[in-house]
Image (cartoon, rainbow, N blue to C red):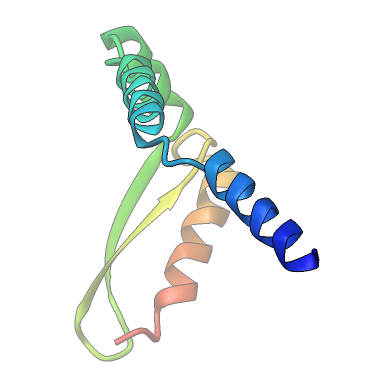
Amino acid sequence: MKKLLFAATLAVSSLTFANTTTGNKEIKEEVKQEQKSTNKELTKEQKEKLAMFFRWWSVSYGNACGTTNTVYFQSDNPDGSAGFIDELAYAVNSSYYTC
């Protein structure tokens, strides 16, 4: 009796977990279409605002080994201000001995 119950349970469970690959494909296609529609180009005004938000500067200098290093650093301070000079000094000092 236990074997018959086990076989019936196994048969029912295998039928309930049927292969539904077509449904999964449709769902994946919907997700891909949604992802494609969310990518948008930035307007010229948005690009300018983004560039103003992230101000990157570069400096080239001779390092301890005699070669030239170019370091990029970010600073929101105006050029020549005390905050800008501190960030510039940190960028140079932190990579001076990198050869």
